[in-house]
Image (tube, rainbow, N blue to C red):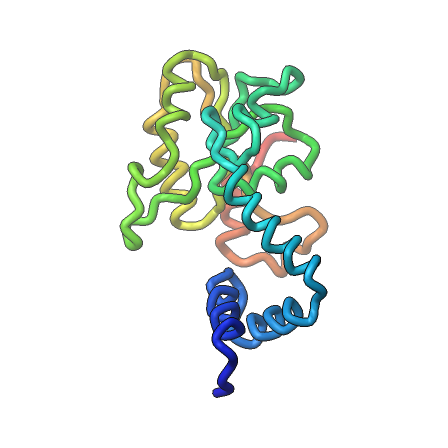
Length: 199
C-alpha cells in the first residue's frame, strides 16, 4: 500500500468515513483537493464549517433547517393539519418532487430495528405524539420505506397515534408507473394487489 504524507493520509482517512466513499475514491478526492487552488479548498472547508455551525433540527418537525421553525412548519400556504411522517430529511425532497402534497412533515431520523438496537426511544417520535395529542392534526400519512424496518415502524406508529377523529394512512406501494408487471417481484406485486382501489 502506498505511503502518503501525514496530511494527505489524514484527509484520505476522513474522506473514507463518508458514505459510499472507498479508499480509491477518497484518494482521488484528496488529490483533487490538493490540486485545487487555495480558494477552492478554503471554500470547501468553510462550507463544511458553516453547515455544522448553522444547521439544526426544527423544533416542530425535526427536519434539518437553518431557521426555526423550518420553512414547511412556518408556511401559511401549507396544510398544517396534514402531517407526512418520513424516515430521513432527504425523503422530504422526494415527496416534494411529486408536487402532489401540500401538508407538513415529521422526520423520524431512522426506523425501528431491534437487531441494530434501535427502539422507539432512539427516534424523533415525541414531537409527533405531542402534535397529535393537542388535536393539531387531522391526518397522519406514514411514508416510511417498504422495508421490514419501515413496515415495523409504520405499524408501531399507527397503534401509538390511534385517536378518535385522527385519520392515519400509509402510502401505497406497488408497481412503479411506466413499468411492466412481468418484471415485478412477488413482494412488489403482492403489495400492489393489497393496495388496489376501486376505479
